[in-house]
Image (cartoon, rainbow, N blue to C red; front, side, top):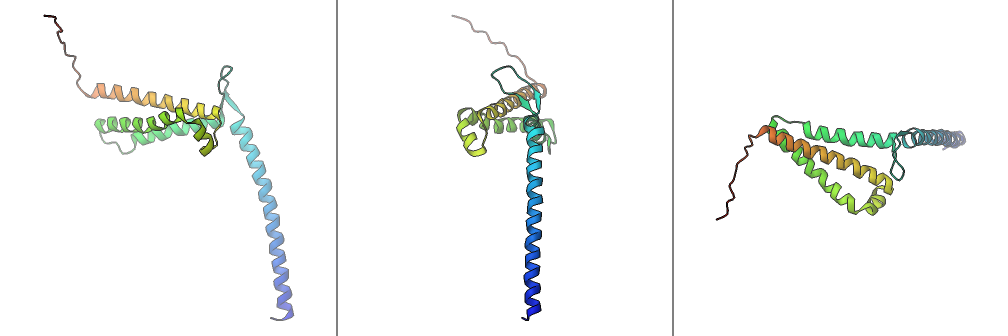
Length: 160
Protein backbone atom coordinates (compact mmCIF):
# COMPACT_ATOMS: atom_id res chain seq x y z
CA UNK A 1 0.00 0.00 0.00
CA UNK A 2 1.58 3.27 -1.05
CA UNK A 3 1.34 6.61 0.70
CA UNK A 4 -1.55 8.00 -1.35
CA UNK A 5 -3.76 4.96 -0.69
CA UNK A 6 -2.94 5.09 3.01
CA UNK A 7 -3.90 8.77 3.29
CA UNK A 8 -7.04 8.26 1.16
CA UNK A 9 -8.16 5.36 3.36
CA UNK A 10 -7.53 7.31 6.56
CA UNK A 11 -9.29 10.39 5.16
CA UNK A 12 -12.25 8.27 3.95
CA UNK A 13 -12.53 6.56 7.34
CA UNK A 14 -12.47 9.93 9.07
CA UNK A 15 -15.15 11.25 6.71
CA UNK A 16 -17.38 8.19 7.32
CA UNK A 17 -16.90 8.59 11.07
CA UNK A 18 -17.84 12.29 10.88
CA UNK A 19 -20.92 11.56 8.74
CA UNK A 20 -21.98 8.79 11.10
CA UNK A 21 -21.64 11.12 14.06
CA UNK A 22 -23.76 13.79 12.33
CA UNK A 23 -26.42 11.22 11.40
CA UNK A 24 -26.46 10.01 15.01
CA UNK A 25 -26.95 13.59 16.25
CA UNK A 26 -29.83 14.13 13.82
CA UNK A 27 -31.32 10.74 14.75
CA UNK A 28 -31.03 11.55 18.45
CA UNK A 29 -32.76 14.92 17.98
CA UNK A 30 -35.46 13.25 15.89
CA UNK A 31 -35.92 10.56 18.57
CA UNK A 32 -36.22 13.14 21.36
CA UNK A 33 -38.76 15.19 19.42
CA UNK A 34 -40.81 12.13 18.47
CA UNK A 35 -40.83 10.94 22.10
CA UNK A 36 -41.96 14.42 23.19
CA UNK A 37 -44.66 14.39 20.49
CA UNK A 38 -45.91 10.96 21.55
CA UNK A 39 -45.85 11.86 25.23
CA UNK A 40 -47.69 15.13 24.66
CA UNK A 41 -50.31 13.91 22.19
CA UNK A 42 -50.89 10.32 23.28
CA UNK A 43 -50.08 10.06 26.95
CA UNK A 44 -51.03 13.48 28.31
CA UNK A 45 -54.00 14.57 26.16
CA UNK A 46 -57.17 13.61 28.02
CA UNK A 47 -60.20 12.13 26.28
CA UNK A 48 -62.38 11.66 29.35
CA UNK A 49 -61.81 13.04 32.82
CA UNK A 50 -63.22 10.68 35.42
CA UNK A 51 -64.27 11.38 38.98
CA UNK A 52 -61.71 11.86 41.70
CA UNK A 53 -59.83 8.74 42.67
CA UNK A 54 -60.28 7.06 39.30
CA UNK A 55 -58.11 6.98 36.21
CA UNK A 56 -58.48 9.42 33.34
CA UNK A 57 -58.68 8.22 29.75
CA UNK A 58 -55.90 9.61 27.57
CA UNK A 59 -55.55 9.26 23.81
CA UNK A 60 -53.04 6.42 24.26
CA UNK A 61 -55.40 4.53 26.56
CA UNK A 62 -58.24 5.10 24.09
CA UNK A 63 -56.10 3.74 21.25
CA UNK A 64 -55.13 0.68 23.34
CA UNK A 65 -58.77 -0.03 24.25
CA UNK A 66 -59.87 0.46 20.64
CA UNK A 67 -57.14 -1.95 19.45
CA UNK A 68 -58.23 -4.50 22.06
CA UNK A 69 -61.84 -4.18 20.95
CA UNK A 70 -60.99 -4.36 17.23
CA UNK A 71 -58.73 -7.35 17.85
CA UNK A 72 -61.54 -9.19 19.60
CA UNK A 73 -64.02 -8.33 16.83
CA UNK A 74 -61.59 -9.56 14.17
CA UNK A 75 -60.91 -12.73 16.17
CA UNK A 76 -64.64 -13.40 16.40
CA UNK A 77 -65.61 -12.59 12.82
CA UNK A 78 -62.61 -13.82 10.80
CA UNK A 79 -63.42 -16.98 8.85
CA UNK A 80 -66.89 -17.62 10.29
CA UNK A 81 -69.10 -19.54 7.92
CA UNK A 82 -72.32 -20.09 9.85
CA UNK A 83 -74.25 -18.84 12.84
CA UNK A 84 -73.22 -21.88 14.85
CA UNK A 85 -69.58 -21.16 13.99
CA UNK A 86 -70.04 -17.56 15.15
CA UNK A 87 -71.52 -18.73 18.44
CA UNK A 88 -68.63 -21.11 19.04
CA UNK A 89 -66.09 -18.43 18.13
CA UNK A 90 -67.66 -15.88 20.53
CA UNK A 91 -67.57 -18.50 23.27
CA UNK A 92 -63.94 -19.37 22.55
CA UNK A 93 -62.77 -15.73 22.48
CA UNK A 94 -64.74 -15.08 25.68
CA UNK A 95 -62.94 -17.94 27.40
CA UNK A 96 -59.57 -16.77 26.07
CA UNK A 97 -60.18 -13.27 27.46
CA UNK A 98 -61.27 -14.65 30.83
CA UNK A 99 -57.78 -15.99 31.55
CA UNK A 100 -55.95 -12.61 31.56
CA UNK A 101 -58.97 -11.03 33.23
CA UNK A 102 -58.82 -13.58 36.06
CA UNK A 103 -55.03 -13.50 36.34
CA UNK A 104 -54.84 -9.71 36.05
CA UNK A 105 -57.01 -9.15 39.08
CA UNK A 106 -54.54 -11.01 41.24
CA UNK A 107 -51.26 -9.91 39.73
CA UNK A 108 -50.84 -6.15 39.21
CA UNK A 109 -47.30 -6.64 40.51
CA UNK A 110 -46.48 -8.88 37.53
CA UNK A 111 -48.00 -6.35 35.10
CA UNK A 112 -45.64 -3.76 36.52
CA UNK A 113 -42.69 -6.13 36.48
CA UNK A 114 -43.24 -7.60 32.99
CA UNK A 115 -44.95 -4.81 31.03
CA UNK A 116 -44.01 -1.75 33.09
CA UNK A 117 -47.64 -0.81 33.74
CA UNK A 118 -48.53 1.35 36.70
CA UNK A 119 -51.41 0.38 38.95
CA UNK A 120 -53.67 2.96 37.28
CA UNK A 121 -52.81 1.77 33.77
CA UNK A 122 -53.33 -1.83 34.85
CA UNK A 123 -56.71 -0.90 36.32
CA UNK A 124 -57.82 0.79 33.11
CA UNK A 125 -56.77 -2.18 30.98
CA UNK A 126 -58.37 -4.61 33.38
CA UNK A 127 -61.61 -2.62 33.39
CA UNK A 128 -61.67 -2.46 29.58
CA UNK A 129 -61.03 -6.19 29.29
CA UNK A 130 -63.83 -6.79 31.80
CA UNK A 131 -66.28 -4.74 29.70
CA UNK A 132 -65.24 -6.64 26.57
CA UNK A 133 -65.74 -9.97 28.36
CA UNK A 134 -69.14 -8.78 29.53
CA UNK A 135 -70.15 -7.88 25.98
CA UNK A 136 -68.89 -11.19 24.62
CA UNK A 137 -70.71 -13.16 27.32
CA UNK A 138 -73.91 -11.25 26.64
CA UNK A 139 -73.47 -11.75 22.89
CA UNK A 140 -72.90 -15.47 23.36
CA UNK A 141 -76.01 -15.77 25.52
CA UNK A 142 -78.22 -13.85 23.11
CA UNK A 143 -76.90 -15.69 20.06
CA UNK A 144 -77.37 -19.05 21.78
CA UNK A 145 -80.92 -18.18 22.76
CA UNK A 146 -81.72 -16.91 19.27
CA UNK A 147 -80.26 -19.89 17.43
CA UNK A 148 -81.66 -22.71 19.51
CA UNK A 149 -85.29 -23.35 20.05
CA UNK A 150 -85.36 -23.06 23.79
CA UNK A 151 -88.49 -24.32 25.39
CA UNK A 152 -89.49 -23.76 28.93
CA UNK A 153 -90.56 -26.98 30.55
CA UNK A 154 -92.83 -26.90 33.48
CA UNK A 155 -92.14 -29.22 36.33
CA UNK A 156 -94.52 -29.95 39.09
CA UNK A 157 -92.83 -30.19 42.42
CA UNK A 158 -95.55 -31.70 44.52
CA UNK A 159 -95.35 -32.75 48.09
CA UNK A 160 -96.73 -36.15 48.95
